[in-house]
Image 1 (cartoon, rainbow, N blue to C red):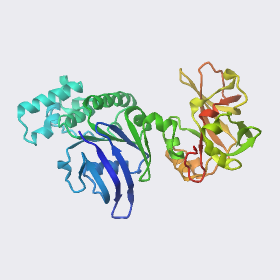
Image 2 (tube, rainbow, N blue to C red):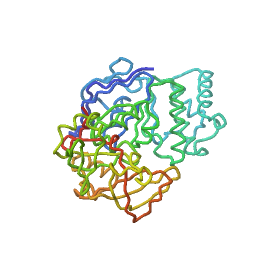
Image 3 (cartoon, rainbow, N blue to C red):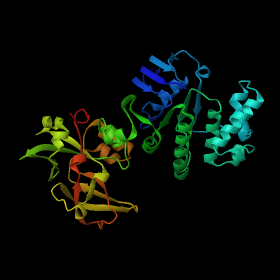
Image 4 (cartoon, rainbow, N blue to C red):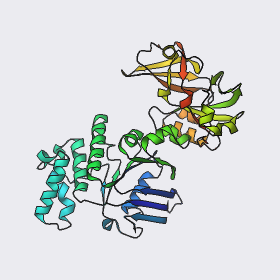
Length: 396
């Protein structure tokens, strides 16, 4: 096992495209780190530089304290699991798992022992004599995992290994991979564009945007304390609700002008986030998670609330997702436009709308209906605030 260190690593292609920019990242020995971000953000390029499949343009890449910039891929003691499984169709499961050991001239009895140990961990023992075409997608992915496990490498590298599986299998394999990594204790770098995978699997998440690292943190820390608008909007499902507002003082309280409405903030907000003092009388971007809003008919709190017309209600059993629009300004920063495009909202991405669409998670006992005007209580102590120019979170 080993740590992996990116020390101001850059990757610039011959056409001038700067895929990874000054990446500083220290992945601890035995850690499961998830590299996440939208397509083209540089996460797979970073992984391929660890693997030795891409050259490092500048900076230092270290594995186990050894600089590996000039070390060939086969000498880095890493194992990679690909999206495509890359199994040999004419070989049995046992032969596929043990292939890497055979080309290293390992003794046959040692190969058999390792293959059977890996198969037992992956629940593949009864399939060792089958060919890949006789397996399900999830079983094939387990075989690909087994081929990596038997090598006992210093580092596992996984490049979107679950993207070819259906939703049910992805959920099952997420937990299985996380459990296997925990049991083996091997340093693992896992690349995905799926923030749900990132949140549920990693010890830490590293979120990238256009080749630049945005934030590194434990999943819950990143969810609760995003560094900027891009992190806030990318991590979480549904995405964080946001709007561009004016922050004002009203007596002893702060209020935000949310379109035609004024939302009073709880008394403790300024004490918790004193940096807001600098923005009084100015525009800010506010963010609120769906679970931090509730049907005011259930809370009896109309002081920290807004009114809206219900556009859609999704009953999910444990909660009700209520979609509504507000006559508020959409954020106009680059991060917000990139997030809108990433989430498929091309109209919002192209136009600076004077309407925002929000989603609230109500308790299932709420009786809201489509077309109804409702009052929504907002837990303003859980609200997030961002600078509209820099997109950075406003805190101290």
